[in-house]
Length: 297
Image (tube, rainbow, N blue to C red; front, side, top):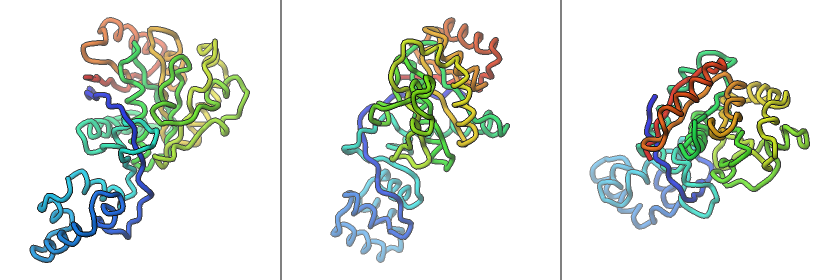
């Protein structure tokens, strides 16, 4: 399961909800990718050679293949993001550019995880995404996998257990508020802390929240087990982002609670000895290593 996944950063904006009755031309005009005069030229080309709207538009070089895929995704209720004013980061490649090489690789990884972990046992709902060191791409990968599962129509929850250097709130552009730390310290309820991600239907996020002085101790509390029990009972897929495994015990605790882990490493950065030692430690704790991903950027 080695899939190189480069990181991309910026901001983007979600297209309005799909309307299956609208034509590709309507969608492209409304999104500013075509004007009515060009639509008239495309329709004339269709009448001339009997081609589909997208084929005619491409033949006239009036749109790109990405424009056509965008319109089709809009028709089929497949969440896609457009560059714009939204605070959501462009790191969410599966929504911003789902037909790119990176997007295809993430969906392939999603499908492998569905077969290897989520699809084998109804009790397997939770998976930790881990790495031995920081800056190996696990937050990027976790966010994109969560969005990809939601795009598949699965009710998905992403939990940011990194209460030391959290990233998910930044990736999804959510405002600071109560999160996992507040839930585990019993200052807010879980239902209050979980937020639906408006740009990705079916995806919810439990951010890390305020940075506590005792993250390992919080993850070791029975309250964390209750959080995962609730999540597994109410969602089809639960993914956990984690801090680096060699820096603290947080990732090991989270993976042990999940029962399974996906190990992430980065080409030309990760040390094989450190990653192997970390993975062996997880196995010794009874954690199933579902697979590994090698980032190449």
